[in-house]
Image 1: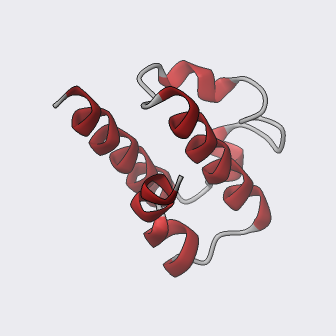
Image 2: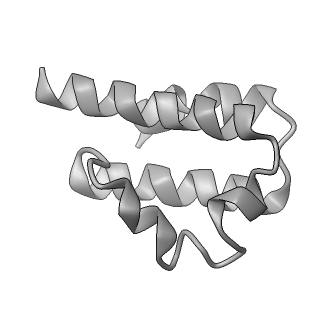
Image 3: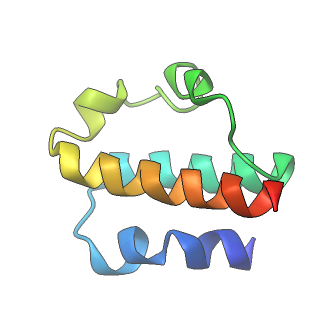
Length: 81
């Protein structure tokens, strides 16, 4: 859990995310902790990730979502290594 939170620390600690965005990132962290990676991004279109709306609704600033997606890809790459 700590390693996953550290990977997303830039977004949880340094970016001004709203409650919906923090909830979404925390669901990603929980998923990665339970499954080791998040290979199939299509699950982000299902509950609990969509409890507060779709990715485009939650992250109207696409650059924030791209950064989070980059962290997910990095975690997946590390899991495969």
